[in-house]
Length: 214
Image (tube, rainbow, N blue to C red):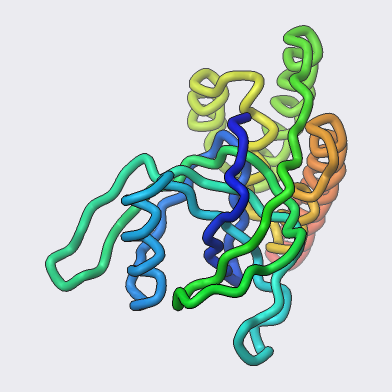
């Protein structure tokens, strides 16, 4: 994971959690975030994604202390001033303090939260366990297993945990809890727990539908 600068621009959103090694498309339209994007493009191309903890609060809205830095890997300017961008998650960080700035957007001092690499053999065993759970989940939902198999074929084992954490239909606080796991191993264990719950939930829902139809 690349090192972080001493300060980072942050983009607080209420329904988005970015994970390392995943891609996040964003539509930038508010003037303050247009300025943030312009400054990032002229500098290090980094934006810190943080989850809003209370959207009903007044500005500046409170945020969770753990977020993830994203590097702008795609940028498409729209003639009216809006932009479409894609961030690639790089390094998790903890907000140590918010910095005073004259900019319209928020800037924080980040503490990088590096995660140790996982041995390839362990990753392969995780892949098998997650594949088994995902097959059970898709079957419980009545989905297409072929699409699942194509997805698993394309994914690198080392990126699988973060990809599933970002892409599965989880509650936003469940997703944040996965990001806040101190290690990838803890994230894998937490993801398995969530998947087991989702499988049981889907099976109960299917059983309920059958009972209603009968």
